[in-house]
Image 1 (tube, rainbow, N blue to C red):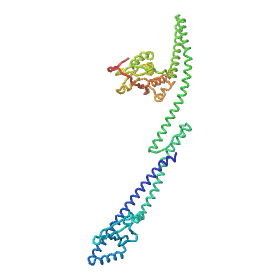
Image 2: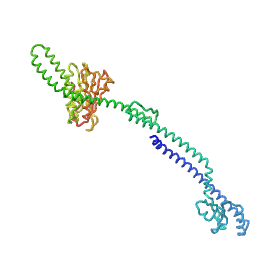
Image 3: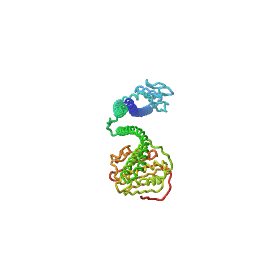
Length: 456
């Protein structure tokens, strides 16, 4: 892992550094080489012009052309000008040992020449380019040495940088392997950096923390699933005897409570109420363990709410509660009618139970957006006792309740029913101030109406 990452970082950076340094060094040497060639051409041209001036001066003093030519050639031969040549009729009159017939036409030589028309001579210098190149290299040896030193230092710095980059990545990989091997979420990676790797390590720690929470939740859900299956089996076995017991007690009450003693009737009523309570618990267990698959249909929100409000009279007995319904249009959703009714019934019962004696419950229906594929938002607000922050995290957990007579299954069932009907639910609450339940469902259609309020 380490070698692979380091190589992927190190090799491209090294190649880039080497290429950059070699390019700069090569450009510098090439520029100096061109400057030397230009300087030699200028010097050669100047020397040729001086020789031409000398030849003109000799011609002015010696009027015999042949004698003048001989005198000039002898002087130039004695001067031993290196790389100098004179050509007449394609034959060398003067040439250095380094010059031959092929030198004049070779690309390896730098030729500078001038025609002397009076004698039909070609005067010039033939300079071998390689000699200047080696001269430039000799002059630039300090630059080459410096380039090599910089290259070595840069490679060392690159190695250090690549290691510092790959080291935390390797730590992250080792950490992930530990998590996989041990299935433990206790260890946390400690990479204190302010760059992207530091952000990655922090995100990984957060992810592990979430995984730990979800793992605990999954273990809890597995346990609850087992309990739910067990409870469903028991519930089926209990429900049938309960029905028979209730029927028998009702018959006995009718037969035995004809006398004026009201105590017998109260006892029978108490037994029947307890049987109803057990039946309610059994029904809740069955709904929680295996909720019925939704029968999707066009469901008008207002119709469901109206039917639900008629069924909550028992829960609100002895209390002064105002229910305020606010909506702009009767929105239709595609859901199971009885499921949505059960959802509203449970939430409204909870809202009523949270109010001690006097209070208000607001039911607000809003459309989110303007398209048919948008959502309807339903808020059920109460000013009851509210829920503290610690309990708010557990409200959807099965069997969690703060009421003495509660089963702890109501909101768990609500959550499942909302989910299987393609909706979402969340609850906001402040202790001693009230609770707001917010649900969202996909819109199926709308019946346009004016703004309306319904007060109970």
